[in-house]
Image (cartoon, rainbow, N blue to C red):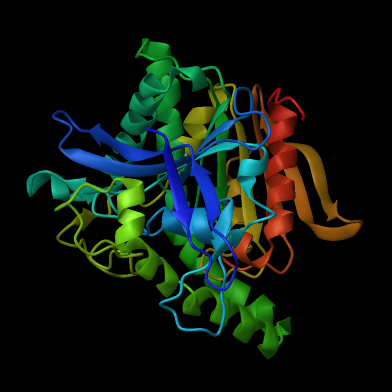
Amino acid sequence: MISVIVVKSCGVAGLLEVMVSGCSYVGVGEREEVQLFYYFVESQRNPQKDPLLLYLTGGPGTSGILSLFYQIGPLKFEFTNSTRSEVKLELNPYSWTKTANVIFIDLPVGTGFSYAKTWESSRSSDSLVVTHAYDFIRKWLMDHPKFLSNPLYITGISYMGLIIPGVVSNVYHGNEQGTPPKLNIRGFLIVNPRTDSFIDFNSRIEFAYRAALIEDEIYERNKTVEESIYSYSNIWGNMKSVRQALHIRKGTVENFQFRNASISAIFGKPDAIYYSYDIFSSLAYHKQLFSKKCHALIINGDQDMTFPYVGTQQWIKSLNLNVESPWKPWFVRTQVAGYQKTYSNAKYSLMYATIKGAGHSVAIYKPEESMVIVETWLASHTNSSKS
């Protein structure tokens, strides 16, 4: 499906026309009882050859709208002091879609515009999300075979650090078993991942101790950005014109919610009626990938206390990989943007990179640095043509 979303930019003459290459549903499960909604944006450079990224938003229970309009998509909400009933969009100069095709998905079921056909299928879990994400990308590529030859990366942020390695492992296993279609998997990318619950949560203590050097002004500014802007997405997602443009099925999701509170993970919270937390560490999945020709990029904002960089460093060290290149700075516009270190094990490689001054939603705090490190890493492992 090809859809054109026309958005009236209040206070600006004319209309802002944005081409969204595809937005629709993919049914997963034995009887396709789970309908997952997605947005697809083609690369602005060379969609026929550039990488294809399946991007999973954290939570769980947070809509792909977060990634599309707040972090790495081609558009972003324009935040003004005017009434919030006036939703304005502007171009994002640091979108990952400048050099990659990106699928943004509402996952798990019950998130965003995704819905279930039966009560039984409305309940999900970490393990089911792994299965549904794998089924989704298989079916999506069967419906869009022209992208089968594009290098495929499973990507995402935050809580999806528990999910993504399992999805990637399923893709490699499916290819080895001859499950159609054969996917051109190259690896995965995770931003500020939750990987091992014990390590990640305990690392907050050490991080808090180290972070005594952070000024109050930096903390308050980051906190304000993180908490105050998301109401725009609820307004946008419930606009009749937007729903018509996206071809949202009537009677499925009556009230769009940016984050489904009945799914969202809260530390210490038991399983919810709609969701079971049954993956507490993805380290075993990481280790399964050591025997594959797989490339991984792990990014941490060095000011993130949700899943601090010190915890990420600990679990990466526990993998006992060979050091390929030592800890060193990387640059944007001749300035140190962060630090990076690379590891390897036979055909497997892992790059770990920090981004200076970034909080949990890295692409909000440091959009250019986020785009540069991802673009550089993708270019080093794919044969993307340049414009």
